[in-house]
Image (cartoon, rainbow, N blue to C red; front, side):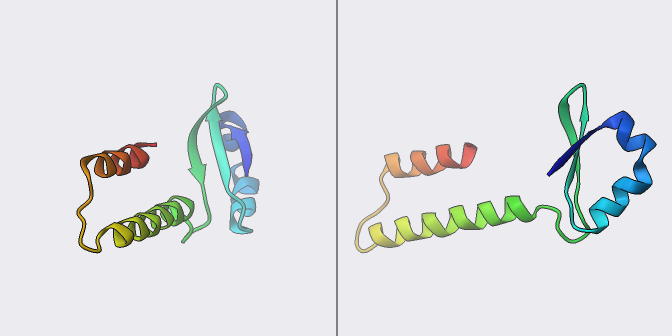
Length: 86
């Protein structure tokens, strides 16, 4: 994933759009801190979505193993909440 300053993004916007159209993700920075991400249309949230789905599937497996006659403990619930905050 490429990173470009806000000034460079402004001055080279056409070239930046061509890169994104080819499938590249670009992070725009201001004072070396990321402030925006440009992704090809239809890909927004793809990485975060895949992570969320994977985490839900993992949690489903844990719940499935423990739900055979047993309830989740308070510690299990707290652990799942803390994992979600990371």
